Length: 194
Ligand code: ITT
Image 1: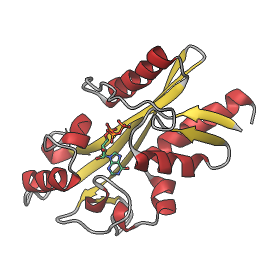
Image 2 (image 1 turned 180 degrees about the horizontal axis):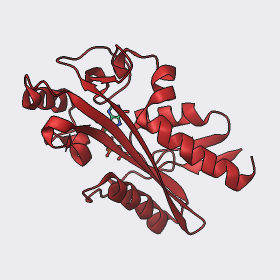
Image 3 (image 1 turned 60 degrees about the vertical axis):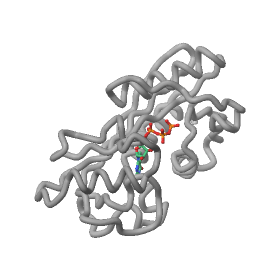
Image 4 (image 1 turned 60 degrees about the horizontal axis):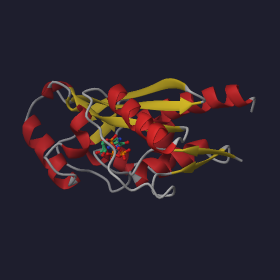
């Protein structure tokens, strides 16, 4: 069994990625490795933050690993919340983060948005980046209870339901994280001849 360390404290991300890589790889989170500190995320891009998280774990713990930085970009809000998605309202409270986003967007007719993920992989002294994007629109109110984060207010293009109305398998087959993770897995399979 191939083991990989996913430098995240977000249990939802961990479950999504483990479901996507299935039996090919076993993913360990930071908690599984007894790493409990808050890892700095001070860059102003997803690429920068993902790279910062993976570099931190490599340099402090000498562990090959990957990290994901992700978030929601809303066109009419000049791509906010972006890298501030987890703490848009100044706290990690998702109720407050969604309330703030919906109130800033107000009745704006432009509801275009996209979720983006960048995965940074550190392996054998090399650094590789994998990106995934999904376009959609922001709803007027929350719909659905599945998923996490901004899922209740995001309808991907081509669908008539939010990510939070989808079963995990459905979201995991189309999401930004699914796209980036598929690139990561394909890279690792090629490299390991599996
Ligand atoms: P780690 O840094 O420990 O991985 P985090 O939750 O802080 O966990 P990020 O810094 O990447 O992760 O912030 C991403 C935020 O963007 C996340 O907390 C959600 O609010 C939102 N987000 C990311 N992916 C999402 C998804 O698939 N569905 C809904 N919201 C998502």
